[in-house]
Image (cartoon, rainbow, N blue to C red):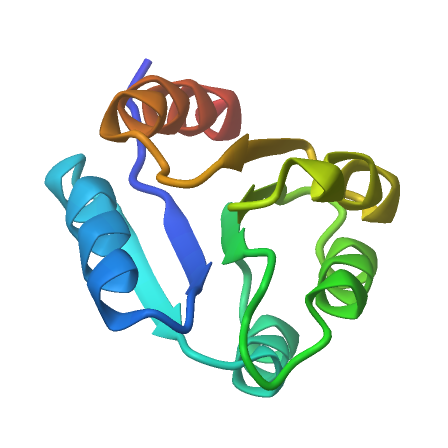
Length: 124
């Protein structure tokens, strides 16, 4: 079975973190579309299909909880991963529709394990 590349929507307002996560995903051969704000990310979700939505939970200038709810409704098939520096957000993220949540900093090893699993799942 051929592993296909994933189309990833990345919502992160910190440039260094965004670059780090993008590099980790692109090293696996996946396509990443980056967004700094919730509004631009939602606009892109309405125009295309994504396999993975990777978002920082505390994006400046946006209601990330509402973004997660809306993204889940728009793309029920996509894997939605929230990353947060605050442990207290975990239950909120899961209730809003996240498939998983991890604490910052997001470890490259987590993505190295997750991305091939999603690519195989989506190839079926």
